[in-house]
Amino acid sequence: MSVHIGAEKGAIAESVLMPGDPLRARFIAENFLDDPVCYNEVRGMSGYTGSYKGKKISVQGSGMGQASLAIYTNELIDEYGVKNLIRVGSCGSYHKDIHVRDLIIAMSASTDSAMNKDRFNGHFFAPTADYGLFKAMIDTAEQLKMPFHAGNILATDTFYQDDREGWKKWAKFGVLGVEMESAALYTIAAGLGARALTVCTVSDNLATEEFTSSEEREKSFTEMMILALETILSFQ
Image (cartoon, rainbow, N blue to C red):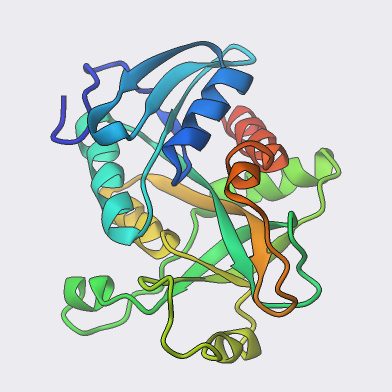
């Protein structure tokens, strides 16, 4: 057991899906994994291990924000030997042509967080997805005929921004959308020798003001879930 994960050694697979919402973790386990076993309920952050088409896979909630995700990423890699982490999250779109329910595969993650500034003594690190996982997901999406957008996203520390127009500058520089976790995920995985990738379903659009409900975000973003699971199968 680790500080925040109550699993025994060997209970967690080498490949883990990481939704922010623990209820989405439960949904994935119950609807896509065979014989899922709950290995963690500490702080309500559900974790499950089962099999998908014969492959052992785990799914672990990470909570909202980079500070929360960092805890679970560190423990999964350091304490349980996880090698591949795919965040399956939701994000906001910055562009009118990236619609609600579209898929965004994050090549890299810009951030307004000071976490890496502190980690690298004021220097700048570019958090980037693992190329092998990224290519595997691109190939899998094309094989499954799932349309997607790929590029840079913003991992922010602040959900409610004081500057309501600040997102437009990120959009001007080609950032596709915004979430709250991926810069920390990519940085920690790189530092600990694991592979990481984020795929998000667009839950709202800042340019058009489209949005989805919390229940839709929990239960209806199934295309992203299938893409992540099939990517793990193709990758190993």
